[in-house]
Image (cartoon, rainbow, N blue to C red):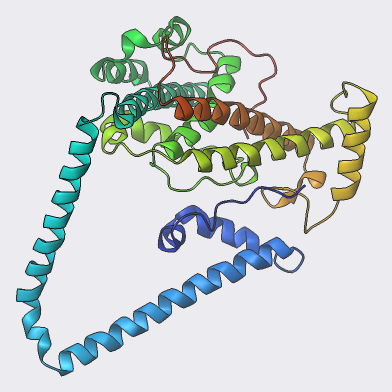
Length: 360
């Protein structure tokens, strides 16, 4: 029952090494390298990458020195524009052929993809607004504002949805939540919509705002800034029409499902959750006993094994894994059909849920 990979090898090497979160995770990995084979493999991968980058840098310096030694460096101002013109001409010709091919089809897959991308961009904006509002409401609950200070979160968020033309398409439940006065959300609503950070992270990944999707255990903490930056600049959602490949979504969904099963097994074995039947109880006990304390095989929640995690952290990881599994299953259905779902834009947290844990 191996843990899902964090996609270290699925993105380009340079892009992986340029991601800040990779280095944060690497620090945690270094602290486990003496007892975890997975940690040693990741450190070896990063070391290889750094070695390749250093080798390329050295080769580049050597090449430039040799180039300058021949005197050909003085031709660069004339050669480079020609090379750029040739590359640009080839790119335009390729784009023209692609456009002609698309127009020749009565029902172009690109057209369906464009509609689906538009729907996902609008849904991302809705989640960003709701999460941004949850962050604002939490701040108001925990902070005493100075006299005369005006809160404008509600007005700003409504204006963004209207400016982007999706206010009238938002579900009634979500609209009602957004229209409530600033500071009027109770803690249950704040916690419920704050859990929307997981769908927002997934949508950002699907739309290529993020190029890599860490595992559940690497994303236990939330950051409201990923919502606020979209509310401030919603145009970034439509700067490109690319979407992640369905094979990557399927792999991430399967990883999340495996993590969910591991967390459920641990919860049942500890007595936090009641098994549906004796067979399920026996399965949970076997999984828990096999992985308990196993530094090389048990799943990681942050820098702790699932078998070492507190009840609160285990519940939070279970909730996130469940959300990711279900949400990516829906995304796969949309990608397979190439068509967005019908009906209003609606978050998965518009209805009350008594079982929503507090975000960690």
